[in-house]
Length: 103
Image (tube, helix red, strand yellow):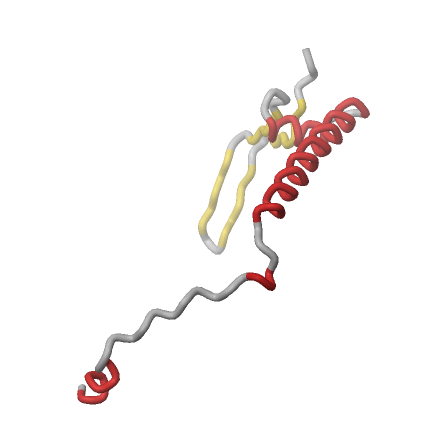
């Protein structure tokens, strides 16, 4: 079992005076759960060794390859900018200017 990765530990708590509003929090403890995506990321950045860094790099490579593959597919679907035409304008109903001027 992996050793617990404690990111922040304030056993005595925290007392803040925010312009007259006093906030007291007793014990604060933040622990990264390596089973989750965010927990694994934070654990590799704060508590990880070489193995954690290698796993993080492998995950980053996987995400990059998926993003590049998706970008290439969407580029093939689009028309070139030169061939794009603006949408046609809708004709204005007859007599709208006269009605506005009369009011």
